[in-house]
Image (tube, rainbow, N blue to C red; front, side, top):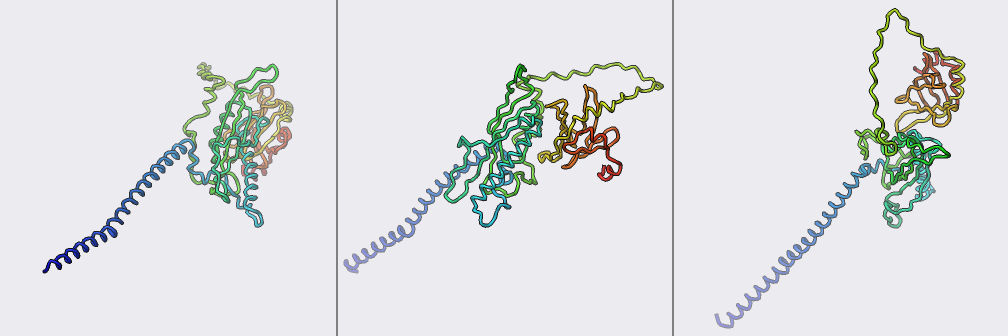
Length: 388
């Protein structure tokens, strides 16, 4: 092989080597380097997104601790739409505004029923829509053409009544299966009128409440959801909130109940006749009952029972007798601190209150006075027909 041939072979080998290097860099190393770079960028983005997700999950967990109802928002939210309002020719926005108007009316009625049903004085209960002065908690501005994530219904509630009624109203509100909350609350002793001193046993409740209408939640006609599972609430169910009245900020600690003194009773002589119970003057009874009136029959959806109210016009305000078929079944009407009628509720519905007294059954309807009811006890056939 001549020198010229060796030179050409060397040049060819160098060319082949350079070609191999170029091919290796262009088709192997460069793509691998680009893949490694993109993998590094993707890993960094993933780590950042994962950190943000964990942060959001932590924040959501803290929110759920304060507002456990949010875990079931799609069921507990007030309905964003009513299927019955979907009509051809009516725009979606008009349907939405009409639905919100009806929701406000129904929620206002619910708040009124809770306050009155808890025992607060009915004439002092006032519920009115409250303009949202603060943007705290407002939904983010939605994209053009899309509805907001949620709407807020804000109301101001004021009422006066006994301490126990105030605590009961707050407990019943918190126990309602609905996505709402108390935004602010003030409990105080109302100012007295005239020369009367303020009574710390009666309080004034002033609170702001807010309910959410979440877009994407369950559609239904009414505000109350139908649930097949228990709801989570902030109030611990094992706590006895009735003791608030015994450890009141306004009246201090209640006096402990003194144990009854043991009184030695002389053994009864078996031959001695028992004194007959005192007879009730029928005329006095009718004179008392002619002022006692059945003023209300109402269904309480929160307690799933019918309730009734008797009002003694002779005694005046604050002498209403609340009745139902579970807790407040027995009642006694007095005349000069002497029992004039002792009755027991056996049935309540939208038309009547049935009670028993002295071995007979009586029916009272809204607006009737008990003297008229007492004069017309139910017959045996009427009692059988009612299944009593």
